[in-house]
Length: 264
Image 1: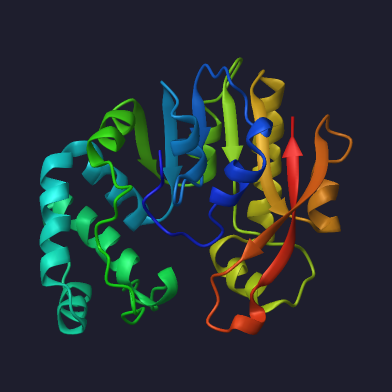
Image 2: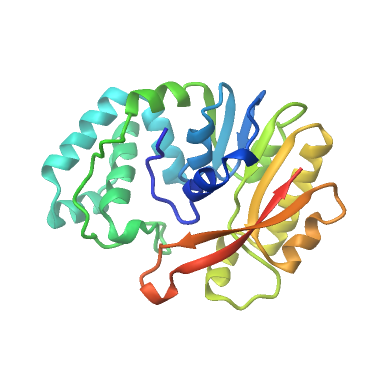
């Protein structure tokens, strides 16, 4: 199934280039940073616990899960009415209805500038309108997504809320913000606000604990010595893969980056 949200650090490229790194047989699937859900929609697990700390992400998935028919109708309405003026009207208004909120999230994601997700200090989405005008895509299958999400428990909260439930025979996929220790890169500084180095250390402890309980682990992370040290000697296989990053306001800042795969 094709994921719906365009999300920073999304893993569509990973499932396309390295499908064999994912297990075929999964008792239960766990993902604490679901974001765009590329891996979840690729695997289509029969039982899952997915979560995210981002409110909009959870609103989006719960909305499709609740009523795909109404969700689809709302998206078609956004498609008919889309314009720059309409975009800013929707961006400035947060409806009370859960399904309307979910459709708003996808609408803004589809037509905002470069698919960027950014909020101000008040937590308000503030990305300007982009050049894309397609709100509903040919690949959108809201009924199938609703059926799949109906097999999942969707929770909002920190990573430990999800990972601590994983045990023998389960599979945990973890794709945290790529915060590292002692790095002055601007992207890292931004991540530090969302996900501190202490969070990175705590995540490693949680994944090690899940592995000891019998769960299979796959974690993508920054290929940095400080991150590698958290997992070396703990029974994990560490390898490096390359990805192309296209989410940037400047074309000069787009290019290939190395990522670390942590498998256990």
